[in-house]
Length: 152
Ligand SMILES: CC(C)(COP(=O)(O)OP(=O)(O)OC[C@H]1O[C@@H](n2cnc3c(N)ncnc32)[C@H](O)[C@@H]1OP(=O)(O)O)[C@@H](O)C(=O)NCCC(=O)NCCS
Image 1: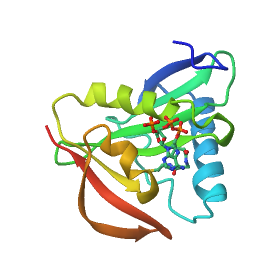
Image 2 (image 1 turned 30 degrees about the vertical axis):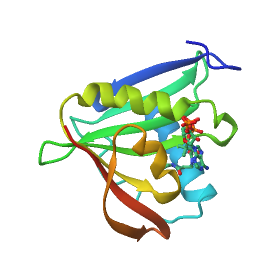
Image 3 (image 1 turned 60 degrees about the vertical axis):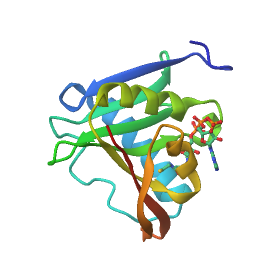
């Protein structure tokens, strides 16, 4: 599929299959956006990126080492899935990349509940996939969030 102006290829990898360069590129994008752009000091390296059940999804331009957009899908101890670290590089926003990644992740989730902690400003985006708010808004790392669940 061509998403103008770049041809972006969807990639998906189990944690165990990641190369060092891939992992570095994800962490770099996450750091640039969540820590620097959003001025938030938080524990990005939470130990979950390399769990056996974790899948990483990203979009890249063929041959380019830097991902355009990224998210991860982790398995929670109660059997549900969790989508997190949804991010698109500043220059690549507004082209439907995050939508494409969430669709890809949910196609693996199938008929299992999936949760996420949405930054409040983008909650309607997740709502369009069937995620529903659970509870009140909370502040995490200085940023307003809503817990959301897609029940199956
Ligand atoms: C939020 C973010 C991931 C969206 O990525 P993107 O690739 O530009 O998103 P898409 O082009 O796929 O758009 C997805 C939807 O989000 C909406 N959206 C995007 N940016 C938005 C904004 N700043 N405010 C409100 N809605 C927004 C779009 O309207 C779009 O809706 P549509 O598909 O119905 O048109 C990106 O802006 C980003 O990385 N932001 C900083 C990090 C962040 O906040 N991550 C989310 C953590 S929960």
